[in-house]
Length: 496
Image (cartoon, rainbow, N blue to C red; front, side):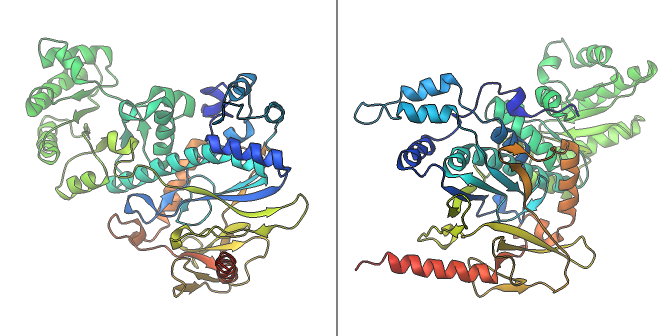
């Protein structure tokens, strides 16, 4: 495998400080109070699918595991923390605590839903268990990695769905949020279905195919468009895709055809043309006619210019003759959604070697009430062994006492799965005692998993507008436990 992981190759310095300050102040307080080794179970999940989608695509796990297993504080990190001051001007952290951090090993156990699986609101994508300090120090970075890559993979999957099998090229580097954002997004977009990226560093580090054309500046460098095309064909005879809209698009197509004939005389073929402005439906149809009449029926027509799933869907409805889509800004920035909104919540605690005790967080908003316990997700399958019927969230310590799921936001809605229905548990071990379990699959294998997973969904769940809601709920016994804990916590908080 050519691809390598980002933290170990791009981010060579330690990343222990990639956290929010309150994680470190909580760690300091836990250390000071003697609760440092008290263990917790945390779950990472999201409450709402992005883009109004009926599903999301889990992504980012490989980089999350890299982060966990390489986590450390370098002497320079500790020196920086030593210089931080509290409100009174004193040191924010005690020297002995910083010594503790310097020798800290994150001996956590992590179970997660594999990348490329389809996932849904309120079910844990990741479960982190271990000493409280270790778990909280991971929170911010894990959310950063999983939230962003899951968001981009989901957007890419929707765009590829709209393209209906035509290749989608990710062209987003110049509009991405920073170098690391561009690399992570290229990876997630490829997993979500994009065929290639324009980002050459992502190609090298992550083993993603790279594709590209040329810019308007190339045409403008020459006195006229035909001269620019001839020079480009001379230098890149096996990679000629001409951008034809610098001056006049249909005249540009004619100039590309002339260059194509010259290429053919030299034993090469014109690969394609790119449209980057104007009425893409009209221009692509007109360009296709010109190319076909000139003897170039196999030449690809690539479209770009602020495309997303909605624009692509509209162009297809108009009969656009586009064979490949170059998508940049609206993919790489997850246009219409600023963030996935995933959260990381404590759901159980214990002393080392003891039994897990469930914990719950209340809220005035029902959607923000956490679910207690050590959670697992069981996915039920149809008689064909492929169709996805629904997901049951249960407490792994108690086991699934029933096959009934209850909507956590509406207890009047429930669903029961057949007694002998096939099923699989989705959270699988990826880290034990701070060490990686097994090898991460290749990006190509993850991409194929995502493609196959999405194909298993009912078309109603995959549609863009008002998708059908995939059944996800709490196992009946877990729902009852959550209800009892809510009532008890509210009773306890009542004023005397």
